Each structure stands twice: as structure tokens, then as C-alpha cells.
Image (cartoon, rainbow, N blue to C red; front, side, top):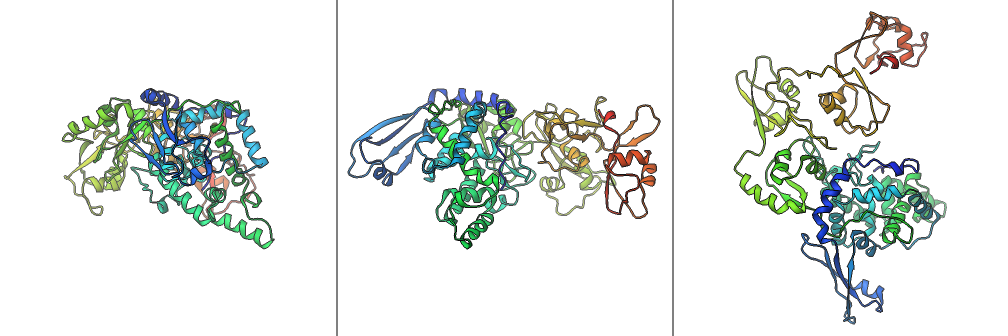
Length: 555
């Protein structure tokens, strides 16, 4: 599992807020009146360690501000009421290992955060919709409250974060690890991005690792970051050399060596922000959202309309849903702001007999195939098979197929996990009708995502990734060049030559630079220059060559 590196000290003060600022304001207004929770604990003069050993926690109604009762040891009959002013105070009260260690690596991480105060304010603000639910789950399991802060280290609390190693979500769960943790991942839904499902899976995994590594939380965190096999190898190497095998003594990748110190540093800062001169975003110790089990597939834009909230908010609260509706086979649970949860639940009862998803009807034409129809309507063959109860791929001309489409496809939203909206049945060609201003290529800007670019130029994410040999979860960075048209051509300035918008060419037997250049109406010098090779260099079958004009003619 790969962790996203904490932003560098140069960039931390300007950490992009995505759209979480708006979402935070929505959540904050929903829970403002339930800002505090109460804890009962033994009299401060009592032996704290003895009380902790005999303590049992009981959670009350989660729709109200959290109230945690701690039953004292039998010999302690005096209870004192303590109020948590916010969720951070509650986390600070539940730390178990953050103060057990004294190491220069911890001090370095504390100093980093102190040098970049904007970063901590931003990530604590971004945590506001989900942190209460995570704290509840950590506490329910009796785990160290430090773990509730792990999404800050892993993803800066961005549920749509994707690492170079294709780990995703708040907890940065890898694509190969997700199935082993029971997380569902398909075209409709990705449990790795679901804040509730991924929290449960990540805590299961951490608990298993802790048992595997003799109940050492530091070694468990290291294994979570780099894999248990790598930690075991490091331990074995130290054992052979008769060296200590604790976390601080192991030779691990640098990112793993900093992983636990980052979490420890964060835990101390959250527990005592005033001591370190830090400011955290005020997040009430009360639920900001509620999980409502719809019970059936529901269009998300329609759900937002029923709930009386904007679609963007609903998508941000439910990043696990990757398309325009909940999964046909579940899960059906939607997180909604606590303020609208009751009204949403009531409205769903009235909606139950009404259509919950929108369909178009398409009459199969001679020569059609499921693949061709799926491409035409920007969906998948498996979706068409599922909704039309088709086994195999045989379809008959004249038959009708149901094509699922979005409730509000004419007004797509700009959300991090926004769906690839399905076109209407009137669309007659698989090729997008591009607006006149669409360039052949596009230079990625700060804050761009594949979906935002595709939506801007009225193409699909699938087309954009296909034309650029990318995956849908690929990271893009400012300055990167993306092809925006499949078969378009551009006229080169000052020349009658036309260069086809083909991205790459695979060298065949008998090819030469001159032959390839002639075939694609360019000079051998241009082709060599675009591929950083010399005219006399050998090329071989299977080699990929880039076919593109010079940067001066882009955009």
C-alpha cells in the first residue's frame, strides 16, 4: 500500500481545497447546535491507569452529540463530567501510543506542521464530513484514536486521492488489496473510495497487522504502508545481524520510516494545538452525516433533488459511487447531511413507487452489436446485459433495449467523482460532436482532473483515457499534454502538410524513419525530434513512436 506523500513545505500553504470548503460549510451548519459531547470518567485524583484497564465504553444514539460513558473500577465510585469541545479533543483523549516515544524523526514532523500551519487547517476542515464516523468506529473497536488521523497522513483526507501506485481513497487502499478486504469494486462503485466501507476495511486490516506483528502498532503502521512482507524482511535482516527489531531500528523505505512519526506528530498537535501554536478547524463532536439505506438503485441527481440538496454535495459525500446512480445490486446506502436525513427518509417512502432511474429505449438496428451500442451510449456491455437480462452477446434487429441514463444529463455537475453521463437515445453516432473551440490537444492546468477536462470539451472520460493511453484513475499534472480528438487533423502553420492526430505508432518490420514520416506526412527530422532520437538511430519492430506536432503548434 502506497501512501501519498505529505505536501512539500513549499506547497503546503497553498494546498488546494477542491470543493471541500463549500461542503465543510454545509456540514458545519448542520451540526452547529450539537457541538459538544459529554464524557464521564473517574475522579482525576484516582489512579488513571487502573481506571483505564477496567474501563468499558458505551455509545449512545449516534444521531445526537456523542456521549461516552466510562464505567470506573469497582473501588472508584466518584464520577466527574467532562465535555469535549470538539472532535479533536475527543481524539486527543483517546490517544494510546503518541506519547510513548521520543525520537528525532517525530520532532522533525512536528516542525514541518508548525512551519506549514495552513496545511493542518485545511486537512482538518476537509475531514469534517467523515471524521466523526471514523472516530465512532475506532472507539467502538477499542482501537487507538491515533488511527482516526491516519487518513490525514495517507490522503490529506481527500476521498478521491489516487497515488502513483493506484492506491485510492481516504485510507489509500490498493487495487490488489481491496478485494482481499472484501471491498466491492466495479464500474458502478468503488468501496476503496467509500468513506464508511473503506474505514471498516482499513481498521480490519490494521487490526490483523497488529496481531501479526506482536501487537506493535508502529510495526503495523509500517506494514500498512509498505506491506507486511517488506517489514518481515527488515526484521529478519536485523535478527541475522543481532540488531534490535523495533520500528526505529529497522531499515525501511524512507516514506515508511516517516510514516509513523507523521502520525505521532499529528496526534500530538491535535491533542494540544495551543501548546504548539497551531490552529485546527473547529469540527463539532457530533454527526455531520447520516447513512440512509435507500434499498434500491437510485439516480443520484434524483436523490439530491429529493433530499433538497445540490447534486455536488451528494456526490462529495458519496465518492464510492462512480456513475450516475447507486449500484444495481447494492450497496444502496447514501450519506446525506444530518439536517436533511429525516426529511430525505420520509420523501423516499413517497418516491418508492415512482421511477428511481431514467431509461431510454433503443431499437436494435441491423449490424448492431452490444459493444457498438455500449460505445454509442457511453456505457458498458455488462450494464446492457444486466438491465436487459441478456445472456451472452446475441441481439436481434428490431428488438428494443433499455439504455440507462442520468436523471439530469443535460446539466452535468462538477464533482470529484462525477459520472460519465449517458447520452440520450437520439444520439446516432459513437463519435462525440465536439464544440468548435475544442483543440486537438490540451495542456493540463492546476486543479484539472480527467472528468473536468472531458466535461469541458463534451467528451467522455473513457474517450479521453483511451486516446491518451491512460487509466481512469491516472494522475495528471500541470503542463501535461492530452489529446482531445480521436481522428481529427490539424494544419501546421506555414505548411500545407497535415498531421494525423494519432498519438503513437508501433514500428513494423521493414519500417524506417523516412517511411514512417512519409506515411504520416511529416519529415524524418520532425519525427526524430519528437521522439528524442537521431536520424541514423536504429528502430525496431514493436517500438512505440510518438506522432505529434511541435509544442509551438499545440493549443
